[in-house]
Image 1: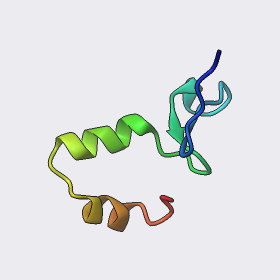
Image 2: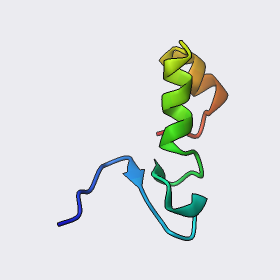
Image 3: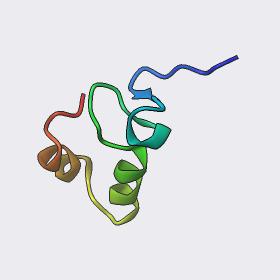
Image 4: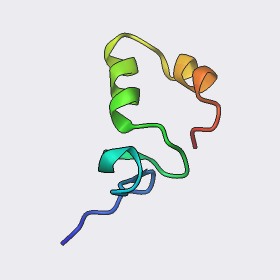
Amino acid sequence: MAVQFEYIATDPQVLGGKPMIKGTRISVECILELVASGASVKDIVAGYPDLP
């Protein structure tokens, strides 16, 4: 059974099937790397204003 998330999707035709934020081409990996490097939510949203 596949797990569905409200804001995360995968598509084999986009980003090589990596998890991404729905409606964008922003990978979950990218967001996690920003968080790990110390970026705040405010910083991330400023850099990616299309995030839901």
